[in-house]
Amino acid sequence: MDQLPEYIDELPNISGHEAEVARVATAARARPLFAAPGGIDFPRVRAATAIALHQHQPLIPAGGSDLRSAAIISNLQYMMEHQDIGDNHNAPVFVWCYKRMGEFIPQLIGEGHAPRCMLEYSGTLLHGLRRMGEHGVIEALRTITCNPDYSPAVEWLGMPWGHAVAPSTPVQDYRLHVRAFQHHFAALFGWEALERVRGFSPSEMALPNHPDVAYEFVKTLVDCGYQWVLVQEHTVIEPETGAHPRRHLPHRLVCTNSKGEQASIIAIVKTQGSDTKLVAQMQPWYEAQGLAPLTLDGHEVPPLVTQIADGENGGVMMNEFPPKFIEVVRAASGSDTPLMNVSEYLEHLFALGVRESALPEVQPLFQDRIWARMQPGDGPQRLAEVIDTLQREDDRFHMDGGSWTSDLSWVAGYDNVLGPMEEASALFNERVLVPGIDSDDPRYRNALFHLLCSQTSCYRYWGQGEWTDYGREICRRAMAIIEHDLPRPGG
Image (cartoon, rainbow, N blue to C red; front, side, top):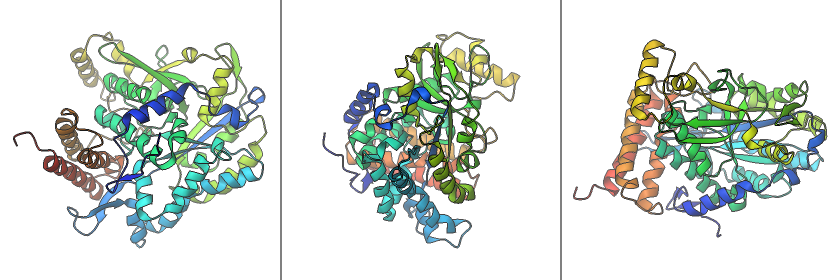
């Protein structure tokens, strides 16, 4: 297939080639791509470590003094242009953080070592970097992604294009985010690179726990060709015990909806903790030093310590991570506690004879309490009744989903953002999805771009004020664009 254009009509390529994207992402899933070029002697591995860097900058209406007419630009660009405000002086360092794995990987491989790192960049960040003229960052990433000398060391993770929070994003829109990222990634790095994107990282580690939403979340990932998803340990439980899962072994995330339908995907359990400090100081590797092989499906397998962190936020990531990462790569290479990426680890695991069906099962938090009072298949109305009863009995019970923190809600107190988000989503569904507007239509792509931008989690992270204003303004623009470009027939 021909290389996709990165931009169409000044917008990133986020729709229009769904069939090709689906074919590439799904066909590659069953083919080993990581184990052989990685060169890991798996039988002698005692324990392994996987780290991922999460990188994100939202798009905001800040390219001008008037909120209603300001150009939508990257928050990083705004930081660059206003370095006298707050912590914006960190902007140049952030740019280097987005680029630096493109320097470390070639350096370490050139030294004869075996670096490993998983990368997760939001579509809004990648678009923002390009629009800022930071082409060197993209080219550095392209080198380690596409050059076969370096690509075995790097595993890209899929994510929702606009950094949307899964539990509180309409399910049809979340699917659009997932496909938009695959489009954009293929346009940036090519079809072969897309074949190797097998793992998914939910923004804010947000896992839906409402049974119907959780089912749609997993089904979306499976339908889009993903093999595994990263979850945080306190957002899932073992159905039989109600306990949080054993760390360091892959599980199966099994989600059943109120109609009795079931979807499952491999879950890689990330530990709780101060993520940036843990990754910056490469603590997962030091944890792996004290581990021994475990029994899984009748086989002795090395445990995998997995952790993800923001790749740029905080002094520890900006300053301490580079020397510590290089130090640990040099120490881990060729040892019995190597760094490995998750898909590489899974390929070796299944080559031993471990069956995916034998992986221990987990389900989202609180679902055990729901299924204790109803049967799958009882339907949405019965589910709503059970949820209402449980919420009245226990104010700690909720269907807001789980995320990296139990101290912050992506729903409570944000009605003034969620309302416009839901209005924009409903209008997009009514005027675009239901009539079947072609996804290659410029009107579709423009409306989709604004819809996805409006659902970025940042508009519900910093509390009420400037950021909620940004979110509401982009929702307003999304609705205005749809109303103008795609009016109701006869309207």
